[in-house]
Amino acid sequence: MSATGFQLKASSVTFTSLLLFTPNLDIVEAQLSNLVDKTPNFFDATPVVLDLTDIETRGLPVDLLTLLALVRKYRLHPIGIKSYTDAHKDAARAHYLAIIAQTETEKFTPEKKVAPEKPTIMTAKIIDQPVRSGKQIYAKGCDLIITSTVSHGAEVLADGNIHIYGTLNGRALAGIQGDENARIFAKPGCRIDRHRWPLRSE
Image (cartoon, rainbow, N blue to C red; front, side, top):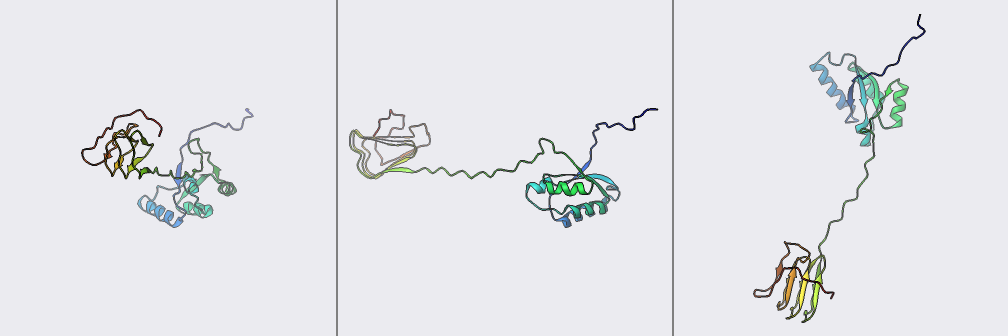
């Protein structure tokens, strides 16, 4: 006669999970009641795993003992829980429920709060004096606004747009870092050049 009384074997068994979305158990009961009314024998002693992970990730409380009583009322048979919190796991063990292990993709990682990115603000370089012959003005990373005149032999350059409210007699170059949408705003008849230009420090 064999002395072996039993054998433990790994098996793949699929259980129904009740994934809880709300701590409001009145809403849960109303939904369960509706399902039972439509299919009276659907929940007859069906083993079920109570999955609390969704509401736990959102920091919502749940009354586990009331939830257990509720599902049993509608002939579901709770056999275990999925949970991230020790308090829920301890309560489940006290009522002889299994703790269902999370898979790697299900393990909870608290969401990190990411600070909103600061908006990029395009400022403008403002020149309120005449740009005389032989001088170069460069607005790096922004628009250039000149409220006075640009003399012959002077150059004004910008990575963004150029606005000239005086007379433009020199050369103006906008979008010199490749911005094809950059524009030059000046009086009609002024000399305008939007091609790249070798830069010289001011």
